[in-house]
Length: 124
Image 1 (cartoon, rainbow, N blue to C red):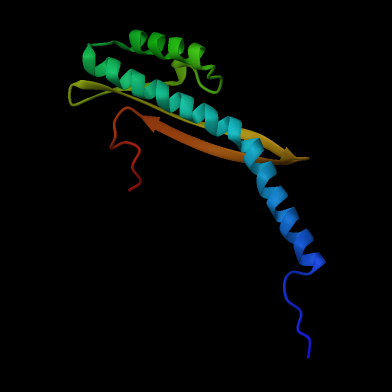
Image 2 (cartoon, helix red, strand yellow; image 1 turned 135 degrees about the horizontal axis):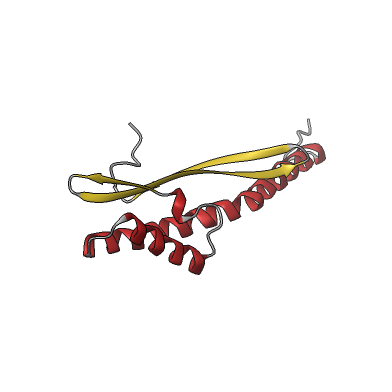
């Protein structure tokens, strides 16, 4: 008896289609995540500035807007930041969403949340 080994042509086509589908979604979502990493870098810079000196809200917004211009951040602006006083120091946070069209009328919604306080972004 001769048993077939390996993949059939149909299973190969299905597997290639699945890989292409995942690659297309990845390419569509990469700009949103790339910008998220730029915002994360701006928040790290902002956190070091906050610990080095006292900054009011206008200074924080100006510092973020300057970093956003350098890193080409378009999803959020300094006015979108939430600045709170916690235990005598400023905590800056932001929540934003990015909608990326995928195919036709199908879109992907990605939610992001960042804070200069390490405990604020943990899931409880």
